[in-house]
Image (cartoon, rainbow over all chains, first blue to last red; front, side, top):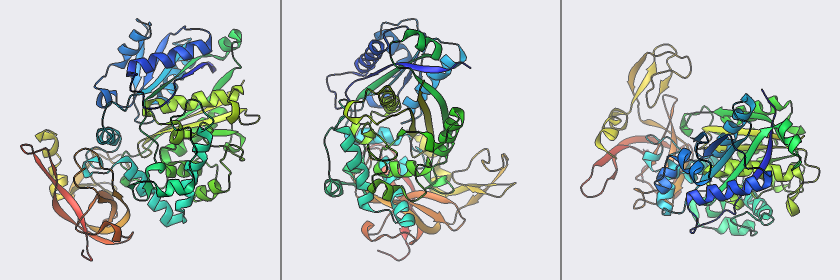
Length: 385
Length: 132
């Protein structure tokens, strides 16, 4: 297996991009990525997208993206693992390069979510749950995470203030990110007084509906060192895990086994422990999700995610910064793009290019991208080479 | 939703029929072809009691398409006396008075419809034993 490095990253600013189509966003992010890499060589393309069919009526992205990118005749595939589709696209591109099938593999994550109404978008997102036994009963994604929040509050005494602090922290980071959809600060009071969506989660506990795309170009570490365009950042560990699609079927709903497996596998491959890692980009689709994930990853003990957030452990200047980009919460959550955007942020940090949100001496980072209520999870460990 | 898509789930939705593994005796709802615990592929049908207690719940205020007329409504994960958990709506109650651990019983109820000329869908919902 060949060592894999990231030579290019490309983002577009996330938001309600009414003037941009699905194909425009994919192409813009990819062109930004080529510019960053200093090359547009591509041997294969993997598109991560959750539901272009329900959101826009367009499938067959394995033709659309190479076509409009000016890369006709390039092998391409579209991968889907709900909100982990972006992470899965990076994983697939990694396997292309590591296996020797491609020397240059492009991963593009995309979601165009604002061409439908909020209720239709809520329906489309709910298809990531068990359609016949969860969504059929009228549960939504905020609803599934709300039930996790309620259970976490019942078992560990997690408070409304602790949940709100996750949003406060991530918005504070998002202010410093030029690609963020919501680059403004929020207070605990604003979060706790925002509209109730699914008790106990309120509007500002939820990541938004977002249009966006992100791209990364992977090649071998040897090739990246030869090019000398950018500081070389390698992907030294990859991990994926899966769990029951229905939340109710898990032996303990507060144990996110898919995340546990994905994190362990990625760290084992990289030969690291979580304590060796300098920062994390995690899947904070809801405030409670970040608390559950930092506990499952072993950044804090079970049940301590809330107090640790209040204590500033996961803040930009804390001992273990989590979501320096602003996370899904403030940066926005175009579902298929989020996993790729996490990689873009990790590379910015490891190159030392993250500007005002730069973490001092960042040498290694981990990304965690999950689908549904934790039915699938993809992790990557990135290191400066 | 077309007719077969709902019809084929009717044993589960109308009668709460579950599958019990012939080897390890674990119960799964809905039924499966492969036991995730022991890998066995033989199952017997068992009917669930529909009685249990509330494990966790929420009140949906922003509803998906097809449910907007019902909001706010409660949805919970119910731990049945058989030891398995099942997700469903909790109805005939004030959602704000629900508490974790409340005893519930399943009832056969109208879920929603596909408009004035479409199919009407029915399924189980849960009602608190202590009444409204």
